[in-house]
Amino acid sequence: MTVKTFISRPLLSLVISVFIVLLGVISLLSLPVERYPDIAPPAFYVWASYPGASAETVHKSVVMPLEEAINGVEGMTYMTSSASNGSASITIYFEQGANADMAAVNVQNRVIQAQAQLPAEVLQTGVATEKRQPGQLRIIALESPDGTYDENFLSNYFYNNLRPALLRIKGVGKVEVWGAQYALRIWLKPDVMARHKLMPSGVELLLKDVADVELGQSDYDYINSINGHPGVISSRSPRRHSAAPKCVCVPS
Image 1 (cartoon, rainbow, N blue to C red):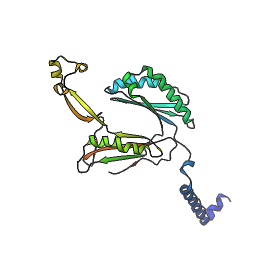
Image 2 (spheres, helix red, strand yellow):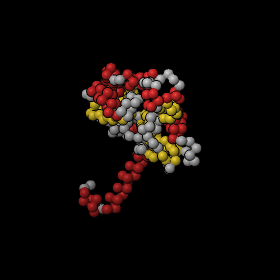
Image 3 (cartoon, rainbow, N blue to C red):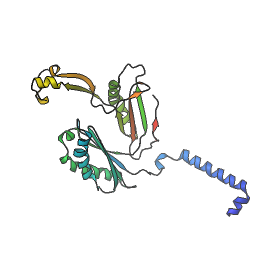
Image 4 (cartoon, helix red, strand yellow):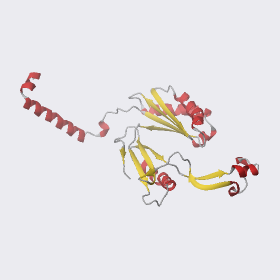
């Protein structure tokens, strides 16, 4: 057949086109997701916590030492980093087709090498290294429509009850909660401390004498409101090589 054949016989061209489309639809519905080519490069996520430190301090004392140690790891193409108040994150991307398991070992070894340069507070909480696929599986919103529960309660509930269950789902590599767990907040009163000539490390009086004590959040990086009510939002990220749909927002 030549091009002239299809031009002179439009009906034949139409039948062949419909046949090709049908074959494509059948293949799309029957082909297992695991057989699809893996087009996303391997990526690894390094996360560290530095409670009480500013973003600038986190960048200088945590991000920079980790970047210097990780940079140049075998098969790496590039990496991105971010620092906020109390936390740091680095994402390392590798060449397409790189051995993900070997890359994970290499990244972990570089992180261990950098630990001697990290502050003691960071080492106490640990530096986490996770293998994951870029992107999000799903965003989940939890709210209290009648206002019975405040944001502190909902965030702590998500951490302790929903987050562990979501992590056990096949294909989920990380669950990020845009909120914080319960924490005992102690607000020292500077004027009272000065009157007693006290430093924070020297407080042995009752706390109520020199501070306001309340049950709050471990950090206040996020303020969530859903449909005008208190709430908390979480996102799920896929593991590497998982059958993951695109990011889907779930209405509350």
